[in-house]
Length: 125
Image (cartoon, rainbow, N blue to C red; front, top):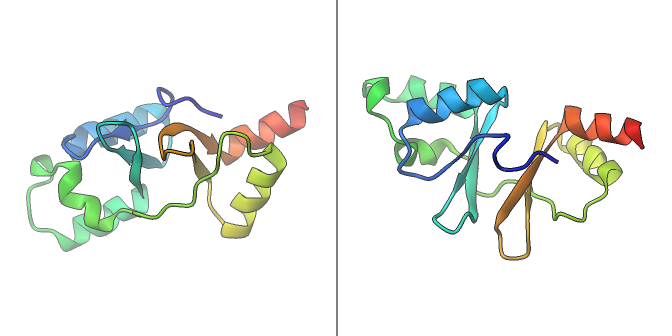
């Protein structure tokens, strides 16, 4: 599992350009949006960002995450910290997704399971 410093985590007041730079530096195709208590609000992917750019006329540099949250997935599929690697890999395969946010019982974002990392961990074991 990636810890929250290893993938993009932003709040709604983050400038979108900063979030995208973080996305590129961490080489992850999604951004997790959290509230001030680090509860997962939603996530948006590079595809969501493309859709947002096609439907808005504002200059790109003026966007905040809050401006594009309408394009985000506000009910993302998540798992708990105790999920087994094999169950997570199966779920990602069934849903054809690359990433699963890991949240605790209070909705606090604890990490991210990325398919490549999950498979590597499975092979190690």
